Structure formats: C-alpha cells, structure tokens
Length: 443
Image (cartoon, rainbow, N blue to C red; front, side):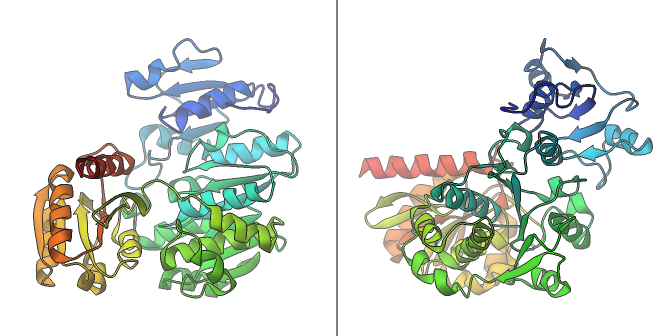
C-alpha cells in the first residue's frame, strides 16, 4: 500500500480520513504504513469492517478536528458546495487543511528524497485515455512510471519511484480543489464543458477547480491546453507561468500517420488526447520514434469506444464512459450511420447540443430514468426513436434495426450517468458487452 516508502516517514502525524471506499481505504493503509496514526470513519458498516482491528487505525466518528494534521475526504464528499459535510465544516472552522491524497503522495515522495516527476491530466472528457496513453508511452520508452488518481489505484497507493520516475495522475475537479503543495512538472487541461455544477456552484467554480492543475508551476514546467472549446481557448489566451503548448484534435499534424495505425484512438477527440500525451511524453524525454510505436500499440481503455462484438458485419461499440453529451458527441462523430443506445440520468442541458449529429442516427433506443426527456429532444428534431427502458430490450432491438436500416454500427454512448440502473458506467458497459456476446454466440 505504501511500497518503498520509509515506515517512519509520517511518524508523529495524525490524520483524519472520512470515507472508506475505493479511495479512502488504501489511503488509510498507506498512511499507517508510513508511520502515521489515523482516525477513520465511514457511515457504512461494511466499509468500516475492512479496517476492523488494524493497528494504527481508530475507527470512530468525528466529533472534533482538534489535534489532526489534515483531513482527507473521499472525493465524492463535499467540503464547500452544495453544502459542506459537517466534518469538513469542523475542520474549516479551526483551520485544519482538507487534502486530496494526491497532495499527500507528492509530500511523501519529496520527504523520501525522490525527485520523481509528476504529470497531471484533467478535463471534462478524455482524461482517462490520456492518462493511460501517457503511462503507455513512458513504459514503451523504458521510463519508470506509476499511474493512478481518479483512474486506477488511489494516488497514495502508488509505489515510491526513483529520481527517473514519473507519476501520471488523472485529476478530477473534486481532487484538484483539495491540493495544497502538489506541483506538476507537466499539466494538461484537455477541454471544459458543464459538469459537476452541483458540486462547484456554477461553471466559474468548476473552471476554477480545474485550473488548480497549473498551480505552483514554474517556467521549467509544461502546460498543455486544448483549443477545441471556447472555455479552454480562454484559458490558453490568458497564458500560463509554465511553457505553454496548445493542441487541437482537428490538427493532428505529425501525429496523423501514427494515428492512422492506432485502432484504439479513433476520432478527433482521441487525436487531441494523443497530442496531449505526446507533448507531455516529449517533456519527459520520450523520442519521436518511441512515441509513434507507443501510439500504435496502445490497447485503449474499456468502455471507451471499445468494439465488443461484430454480428453480420454490424459492429457493437461500448462507449459507456460517455456520461454526458459532450463525451457522446465524440463517439457519434466517428460514425456516418449508427443505431444509438442512450439514456440514464441526464446531465444539465440534456442532449440538445448533439443536434448537429442527429442526421447520423436513423433510430435511437432510449433507456433509463430520463428516457422521456431525451425522447422530447429527439422528437423536436424529427429523429426516429423508441423508449425501450432497459439494455436487455435495447441490444436485440438495435441489431434488428441495424439490419433493417442498413446501419453498420450499434453504439452505446449514453450521454447520461448510469446510477439509475447500474452501480457504475463500467457495470453498464459490461452488461452491454454481455448482451452483445450472447447475440453473437447465437449466430
């Protein structure tokens, strides 16, 4: 959990950790492994039971923040908007710092004497692919690296790297609003569209959180900013302290040839992701030949435009990670004609912004809670659609429709969150793949 870090690194320190899920549990174990004492709590009994009896950990609800060095909140627990959690309020009232575990990783690495470098990737969409691609490029070049954060392992669960290593961290807005000392040698802001506004108050608050990716950078560092939306163009125009590289997926330049041989990176949005990863890889010393080889061999990520079955020449593509309209637009734009499966819990603005792409859709099949809302938008634009409620109905109906309407692609790109019917977008994508495989096996 704290592989390679000195066991007395945080000796004498006392941390509060609230929330013991995918992030909080490994953070507690890492802190204890570095010599800290930890008081931890989660309202769920099952979550608490995972730590029962572990040395160095006190399981108790918080009635005071006095005596703690910092509070680590799981990313989903608010400390500001829409209303601060009571424990966060107690911490703020007496000046206890509320941290992301990414900040603690940075502190632990430096306290261990390592000069390992840090890359941070954020944006509304594309950050997971860019994070995984940068780590892949570094690995291809033989540069030690560890990737995590919002993608994969919690930041503080990553191992200690030497001076030649690179930490590649996907940073959500929830994490970025809680960094205090972390400085990224290379930082990337891919794009910005309305998301998590309930958490950040409004779009301005969301953008402010995202801009923390560039906090504390110097002229020796790298800032990579996308130019494919108005909000990031404004950020780029304002300039940065670090060396600035701007990127557009509509102008892949010298990467065009490599992308033509990269099946896991289709579309302009993935061209932007590849340009961002390439700029950061160059900053860390990866050669052009190594970059080209890494792009060609990148396997892609599950649930991001992943081909899961082919039936009678019809491709079934799982893009369940598209939990908002902007993300769905990136997949829709890759295919000239498709049967679209969408729905779930709609984000602010619904799917209205996808109207320019509706001409590619001879039929949309709608699932989940907000299917009627999506149906209303499609009806206003004269798009044929049916509310089918579940993936179990949508997948076989999509195959029939694809045959009848001569559509070579069935695309699950929901433009909605999954939590009305599934535990996660991963569970939704997995179910889509299972249903497609069943149809494929039946053939």
